[in-house]
Amino acid sequence: MYKNLNAGAIGIRAALPEAIEMAVAHGFGGGDFSISEVAALVKDTSVSAVKDLFERSGVTFGGWGMPVAFTDSDEKWQADLAALLNVVSPFGVSLLWFHCFTVFMFVVTLLPFVCVFFHL
Image (cartoon, rainbow, N blue to C red; front, side, top):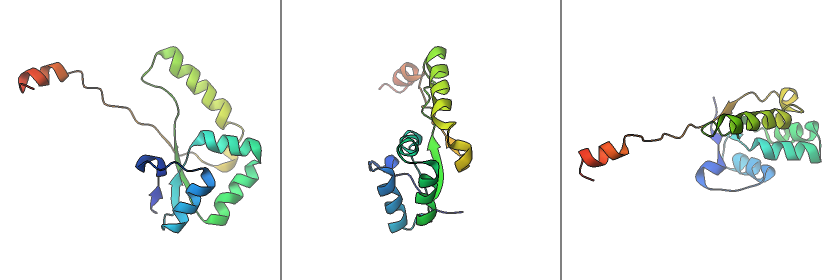
């Protein structure tokens, strides 16, 4: 088990190499990074260059957020999912990055009831 840095979650915007440097500098063993940024870096360089970036730093790729709008229409999330497969398929398996996460935002449908009940 290791500490994992998710710079975006704490409001820090940094390119992948800088985020990896931050993880190393502050004692994190891994990090969550943008899969879209990784895809762009793979396209500009190569899969082996991205793999080497992580191996040289000793930082493990912790996970990546799934950029799919599950709460949108069926057509939208299915299109997002198809686009995601096009982004990840060239390198996902070769980098062995299978840890993906998403957040389902809690929608309060009882808000009018709560407001009335608690006189808010």
